[in-house]
Image (cartoon, rainbow over all chains, first blue to last red):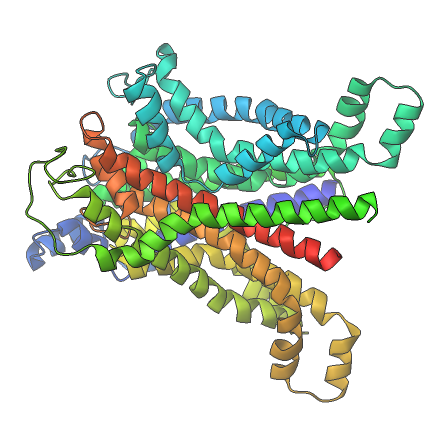
Length: 314
Length: 278
């Protein structure tokens, strides 16, 4: 276990370093020079040269990389080109709403996905199972934005039950729970489907296994067989998919924030991309990338706890 | 017939009807995407934004264009970019995966696969947005980008499928016979892996479709006023209260395309698995 953990952490560190390098390489070394991109509609050479100098782009690449990574290690993410504010303040501003969305989704995801999976497995082949199975199969490939606008049209505009966007609520979303219902619902749509399908498959296998039959013969009550004997084995394949679910959640957050106009990290990122505010994009990409690496390690730890035989996935 | 055979028969039939239903769901948006541009006709004069009626079936969009015509034009880019991206991803993933499955030089395998493992750690959409911040990719650029983020996973699957086939005695025999690398790799290992790869390609295409549509919604790889279903959803959102058709019609088509595509792939795979068992 200890050597497994050490190898997994080492891979995580390598991945974080690689993400930092990749972000730098993509944004600095690509043919589209940041200064040219920033000069935008008036690409006159003097202006480009001025921007280049103010950004320090005239210095050699390796020196810029060293400065940037040195800053990152000290927690300095750089300053925005558009506003001159430190990138860290952008992240601090957007962190709250994103964290709220992600936490709510995760809290609801696990019981909802597992519950639907168990429900379908208990009624395998019956209408309940067919309904859950076909809905989860159909829904899980649907992009969040398409599902989201349809839900907004029905529940916010036709029926008027919920607000269509979070405009006007600022970052204090918790005070307006009605504005959170649709975003969380949309964010849940894809991960719930995968989780439910995996739990269903695992549960059907587990319920058909000899140890469950043996437990039943001993007269162990049905609910106990299901939840303490079959379920822990059934969720093993699901935990191994956790990492991919996290990847989806992250891209889901970006889309959902754009769709519902929620001022979180995703919105900050999209705005920075639109304004070509490279330091903000770089800073956010590093934060998102590092977060993914950390969450992946967490997901692998959970998966390893359930299935110790799995190797480091690389 | 035994009860088991009867059940199998009814299940196969059910699988068949699932296939038909899925094909119907995906058929409407797919036909519209591929053939729509042929029936779009000439652009009419622009009228008021977000108008209803006036000879427009679905009203007008945010710059006063006919929504019906935009819908006819707007599917092609989504479908073609997704197909191109899937093909491109395999164009790289196939040789990389096959070479690393067949090589006996560990350093070569490490050199090919390790960088891809690192790429796997970066969320797909983040990678696309990162590049979009520097370059302004067009549809071709978007196809390349989406292919790029799909290469690591595809290469891993090719390698896994190839490694399984490469470990068979048949490959050893081919080597002893002095067959060329090409014939062993493509003629035997590649062919044995086709089943797995066909299944993966179907699943991958639905994932790619998701990514292409989402990127277009976020404004990557498309003109801000492009005739594209995802762009239509994004740009016409402001008029959702007055003219919901401009958003609802393209959104429904995207839902039908992705949902139907996924159902189709799934029931095709289930169908084939069942046929193999009987």
